[in-house]
Image 1 (cartoon, rainbow, N blue to C red):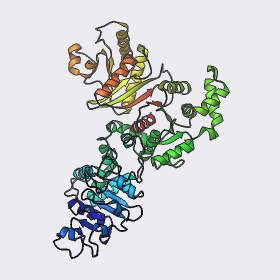
Image 2: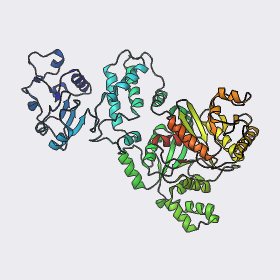
Image 3: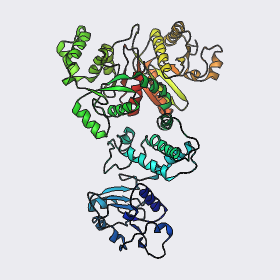
Image 4: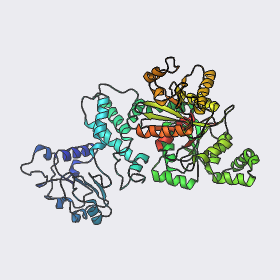
Length: 560
């Protein structure tokens, strides 16, 4: 039963008929009552939906109805009328700002009702913003000469598929942290869902191509989806080389915090994009319950390996290896067993050390330095490496910049600065970017001779000796590093040209403060921290990491 017979109502009904609803199953009610065959003074648009019936009012038509579609006005549907509808009635009361029946009244009359409105303060908001931008995006991108019924249907089906897809952390955070899973309270995607543009627009574009109205067909839809994602995820373009290489590498990636909802959502994306073979550490019951809660499609054994160390035949090998590493650091066999039994970072690190995984991600919860201690003790440093360090990428509107060391070394010496510079330059190259290095200081090319300036100056000499091909200079101010014009005012023969993209700080205070200021003031998106110098690829996630951040770091971990 549909109330309202204006353009919006009739367009909705036409779409329902295109989807398979029988026209004779639709009763349209306008201000004059039911639209029936033989009714006088009826325009041809309404007449298409005229029924051969004795019904004359909404009260007549509503008896036993399965669906109420309201595109009319406030308080049109009375609670006593709703009470006479069929079991589990669909009630779409879409009039704004006041619907045909308020949800609280509808639930009081029919607790089994499934309700949607046009308002954002109730669940299941039906809003044009969910379709119009993406229909136009897809149509314009293929140069469609018209928007036909097939393109609208493609949008409908894409929305339906997305509604039943796994939960999005972006949407969950926007709506109070509750997982959005298809059901009575979540029939339709939320306007904040970042997947809308990369799901709906391609579906519309493909429909335009199928029906012959596209003048600029798209050849590579995977690339098109990646390009669309960049409107939502600004890290997408920067990460593309990493994604491409990770897909080719096919690494085994162990996630220490396998019970974390963000990790499980990221694992779903890793599987969808074929970035790696995930290994998750945790309790099977908890992991499987959360997979179900989030509506994920991943299944143990088919899509990922689950390591429950309490029921794993490798438990002896793991604690024995941990004791072998830590035995002369005061760790007894019993303490080794306890550590492997209770600490997932230890389990992940030992699995990496023994070759059961190719790379690992830990953190996201707990203290960074506690995770770092386990990684340092169990995995250790690479050959010739003085100390572990980090570099963090920051995607800003003005470009992508890499900053080190933001997390580990409080006051590095010249040798350590030189080492982290060379390691960070290699990381920058993995992103497909040629590093331009600035060693930062309060001193500009010898303007000060205190200890801090001297160590950075010495670090420049060491880097120049070890990597003469690297475009690098220092010591210099931050603004001088970013401006060729300012640099030329200070030094005409600098070995650095243009804007530096790898900013090496003199200490952790400068790195951490500078990174956070740039991120907040510049509206930046971070990738990292990326741990450098370990014997095997291991990275520690920040506690504030998002699902997208874990997904990005999954690719980073798999490229080495």
